Image (tube, one colour):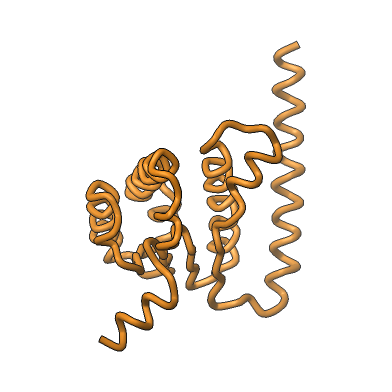
Length: 174
């Protein structure tokens, strides 16, 4: 029974990979954008709608984002921006913000693993926003990820945290 299930999963995996390759071949025939941005929004609503525990939506959102990043880099998109955590998110309850900070730190640290998507595709990671507003552990993880990927040159991943466009404009004017 287990061998049958393994064969079925293997077949499904091969068909899925073939379909993805065909899709990429079709997409590659046209113009691939140079820059794509993602706004990480709706994770709490998704979790609530599907009766998931608090925080589960953010973890699922990260998993979905990693899939999208892989597709972007397989299609040779050069610049990807992620709007990950707005300054306005700090207005949430501390018991909601703190687990998010821990998840963000964990995921940033994961970017520097040898087998990470960043190293697989030669991506330089760059953080945008007022990082001084973040927990020190998150800020330090961001600094380490930036330094660890500074020599990567195939693509750039910009991660906006503690960021709003209004705040950026106000800081630029100063």
